[in-house]
Length: 160
Image (cartoon, rainbow, N blue to C red; front, side, top):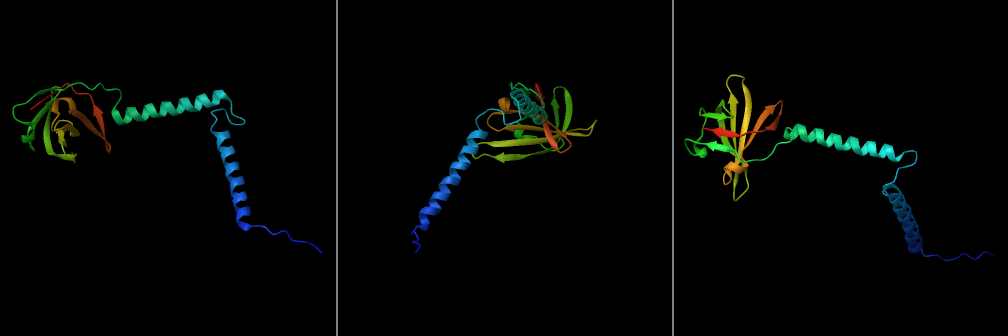
């Protein structure tokens, strides 16, 4: 007569789960040890990392427009910037633009990020001047619309 051993189903399930967890952890340790995978040399890893770094640099250049030093913008104003409205003239580094709109871009609570939409009547290109109300000279940025994205451009002097 065969005697059946009485087992606790909960203990069997726990044991199976712990074995699966151990297998997963050992696989993760093998993948994340920073060494080359099977069939992949250290040199290939360096190339992959190098390519990723180059891609990040290219994306940064597209979004920011290259390396731009953040300096104070020289501002010469004939009236407060808050009074600029559609039709007013603004000069950016000697080039004259017309104001199309002036609005709050983002209200941060204590301060407001403003945008002045401007365009060059000669080339019919669109631009933006962005600034924070409480930090005009240090926060003024100039953007050019390219396709559907505004790309930051360097600016030294703005006058109106």
